[in-house]
Length: 273
Image 1 (cartoon, rainbow, N blue to C red):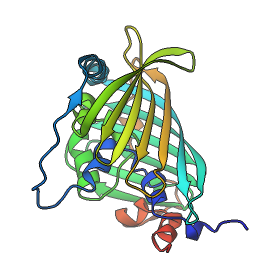
Image 2: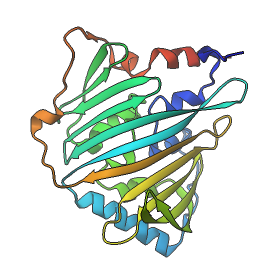
Image 3: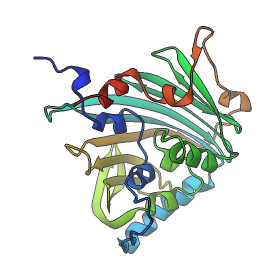
Image 4: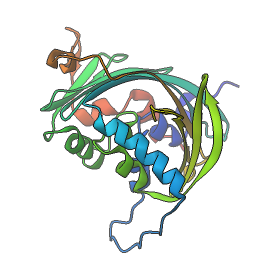
């Protein structure tokens, strides 16, 4: 019998719902009282150095673009995992511009931040929403994640200091060895957090670029995973302001931002038993 999408559990809300951000995933279950004492971090010095070098390299880039091919788990009420695919094309121009084109098996979305407003276009449903946000990428991401509960893909890498953003919720980190990612030798790092475990492959050599990322949402039913391979890094192409301006189809309907951020399929998943 073919499973009905209405039977899918809430795990899909995290993955298909674009909650692909380690900081957001870890902070989601943080007690409101603030009484919990943070755990001491245990990270090997070489692991910390590699993570810092990667973060500093991205931090120093005034603008960059990257292509992402991703696989993620969709969990049925029966406990069976269904693997879905996605791809992203991400462009960033610091300190106040980014755009994302996000395609999945369940439909596509586009996002633009032009320094003043964040626009979300749901291509599959012909709807869009516009939200006034604070100035700067960091402040806008904090607003979207903290106030609206919406996280653009791979947001950790968009922040001005990726090293600090990635490290803040780590409990334990170690080096798993060397590994090859699509022909590129990489340092394979593994990290343990309270709510998520994650692995990161950083290119060996003069360009310490992130080449692969795996996140395990261990507190969700079935411990679904998200895996992304990052390629076609471009630090040379300059994008004009117009590249970060929203392009809305003439017949698209404007709706409220929170409604736009949740697809029809995710609304059904919320009602799943």
